[in-house]
Length: 293
Image (cartoon, rainbow, N blue to C red; front, side, top):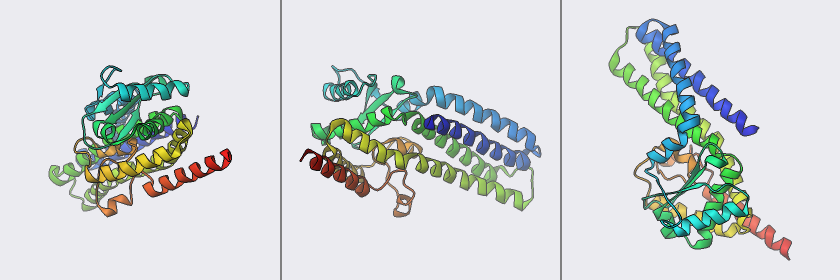
């Protein structure tokens, strides 16, 4: 129910934000705010429809994911299969990204429509138990039904960024039909703040979900330390080899942020600090050992 409400909230946010941008554009460029709002309202509704039914395909295409069978990627496929069977989950599609960046994500509309994706860099870097920890984290997102919210957030963030660029370049080079500096200033402000609003939504959605998926995944395999080791390796691997293709608006879908920016940008990361995630997993490990004793 909470994820359903979050999904409805994302759709509502999209409609309100696009309607506001349409009102500003209509007022400045067309001298008709009703027309502007109407056009962008229709665009927002269409984007919501596409996000719900086709966001998984969009994400897989944007990262050039190749869906694989057991014969094509036996180690990855068998690990996902075993984890899904152990936790009474439908078998998701399994995909691989040809990238040296070690990372993974899950996407889809629901557990029966899910896909779990790993990069070739991840498969080459991790031991079997560490790989199991990472894939358990991704299946935890499926089990916790995070994937719809996270996938829609990625698609909507990309759409909002595109709309903001449209507004920005329109205000810079289009000129509009208004000579009012105040209106043009509002237009520029909207173009700048819209992506920030999308980022704040991603941050609010992603950070707590990562902690929860870490804990759920660690319990799935009864080995928090394996996931902690994997996170440490992935943090170093992604710092050395950040992803060269893809859209930063979908960074929150990955287990580790695959894109690297400035120190200031890290303050607005969609992921919680790795050291804190590792600390919590190590604390889980100690608790498990204590209970066994």
